[in-house]
Image (tube, rainbow over all chains, first blue to last red):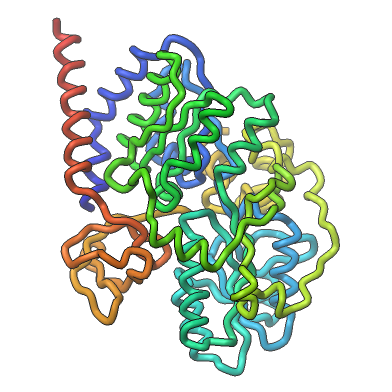
Length: 361
Length: 78
């Protein structure tokens, strides 16, 4: 496919790898924040091309993985309400809540449907006017505008049986929270390319200024990732900390103003609970008062008891980059993709699922 | 989940873009990229075009990589 295949050229990849090796004089720890990067790094065998001086660690960028246990429990509670159709992206179905998952609810008669897009969820609402259709809004800034657009469409067309349980998260506040902990020693961030197509580069300036940690916005093909790593290594070797864009074909410094506008219109920032990171101020998105009739939190009783993490599960540490999946006692034993204990093994983008699939035992 | 696929808009009908993905046609919303035109390549995420692809930038970045690879090859052969 155009704009993909040419960024997989092996000769150019080897050239980049050689250059990284030549430029890298000291050991550095780089965090890829985005789960899509985690998968791409494994799938394309990027680690095997890098010198030993480069340590790549995964961050909290898998939306399913960082969704609070309480929000999973809320979605299960929603599915149990008679007349409700729960719609969601596929990865959410198998995440174990405290005593059930959406998939088990579906098996016991609840109506849970996987959709590819919020447009599909709206279509289900149109075709089932006597039912309440709720979309589980998870995801980062890449996805949030598509959900804002659906709420706007529902509002404009009077689709009153549609609502959203918003559990969206914003990535730059999580980067700040990770660095403010102070003990992770992250030397640079491989910033999420598609999130940045929306938000632009301004949100990373704070991280660079406050912590002096270089940020490079990177695409998802092998040459993108290698070039992004080279740009980070060069910044570190030169003692610089800047926000730079490697993924110039898709990322503009100002982001996507239209998408930002619709997000701003529908959502407002709120404090949000992240699995592994706890409450991070202004890192979530709540539906504004004007659109409250589309907010599932207002329409249904979604109070749930405080939930505990599964015993022995290291997802919380893995999500902060403080532990690798192989350090977890449950990994490959009690916890596998067929029978996952923690969310990092459920999502196809979860760090544990990626290690399970690609990392030799 | 932040997967984005580059695809060409081949038609626009009723405000929706029709894209071609390796021979399969799919409908995408242009609500988040309202100035997209037929012939543009866009990044598609969850049924929406979220950004246009800048062809000039795409070519320039590949050119930079090719130059770098040939410089390195020359340096090695010296």
